[in-house]
Image (cartoon, rainbow, N blue to C red; front, side, top):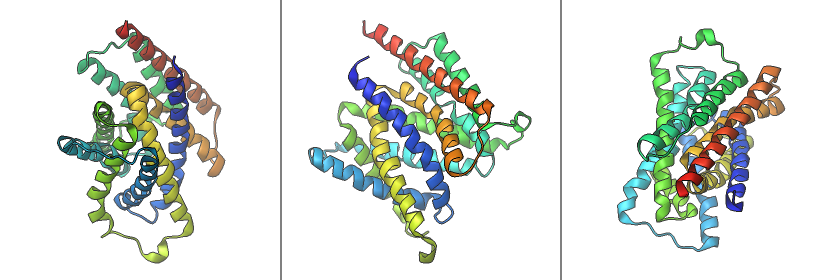
Length: 299
């Protein structure tokens, strides 16, 4: 494994911790802001961070006219669509069941890789995905008696999130032939801001409701989650590929459970610890098998 991939793996692990902590800040901010309004301010901060990085790097932002619709599509699918599906699904299903559905992100990624791009998928990859979903179920403590009691629309919305995130990953990865990671991220954030501002600015909370802690949370969400976070995600899509990158999303239940224990006083059971070990092991299996498949295809 080359040093570039090692660094990317380390950055993706860091990102899963950053995104895991995001839930705590987002939960607090959503008590004041509506989801789309929160996304708007989050991405304004993220845009500022990425713009500063871009200007320090080369200051050049070139967008081909034919790619503008693609950037808009990436924004609709990834930054807006994914979160809209996820947030709306919470009205119909408990978050534990939604997390189980979202665990199918890497599974669908492997299917897309196999069907559309004719890339090899091994049996060990399938076993790794199945083990990962089992481990997540153990971490979040799903009551299997209510697994199929949710409304159908809730499951459809959650699977909508799975589909939009996968489409976002593959489309973004395809744009790397013409743009560097900073330019890709910057263009997507611009599109997201333009798409969300009409709604956001007409659905602002009362001025007295916005406290210093909420503002601090938005700064965190914009800086690490939207700004630096999407830079890492986009770079990983180029270096590691959509399937390996999507596999890291299954580590989010581990980090969210950990931060819930540290900051919210939630308990961690031995079953959750075992589930975490299973998820990490499963992730290692899939990533290792994906690496072998890529090496064999390059020979």
